Image (cartoon, rainbow, N blue to C red):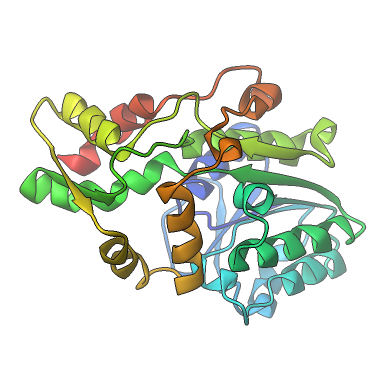
Length: 279
């Protein structure tokens, strides 16, 4: 049995499907009731209360650990989840971390995530760490404005980073959960190209076959839009990166290809698969 937290999200959903397709028994965990693939057990748990995960861990051999935004807050204790998993007999954990742990190690949320990585390394379990950069699926935040106004609104319109397709993250996670060769691996996951928000808007317009106007937000406007969903510290850390990515954050990582034997998917491929959300 493999337990997938965040199982209904942009990474967890394709990961759950990939593991099911590989013949694994999967327990999909989310905060709320949700549809899951046939044959998958679904359980509701809130990782802010680690003991709520206990029933899902019964009989599990491996855990994919994805933290929601509130678990990046300073008062959160996500390391307790690692201890609970070890106590319940889990033998392997794959942690979805962040590229910023290496590229911006002094950011408040990065310090906390590095501490969680260290706790995992010291747990005595088999482990792997995934450090993605920006997600292609962050563009879904523009879906409503594209549908209703034909507008993409974002800060730093001409500053790009190599955003990664969540499906690639999911496939690397599946490989790490299933194959001992990845034990102890740290994978920095990016897309194959640097792409700006303005270029992302153009890719969405091309897939729709209709114009999409780009509107540039100020940093303050962007932060105000983010803080209902993530802690202010995480919003600031994220905005610091997308405002002025450093050379390490602009680097095209070889790690998707190293793990999967193929190049990462480009942004326009993600748009093609996701275009219904923008119509």
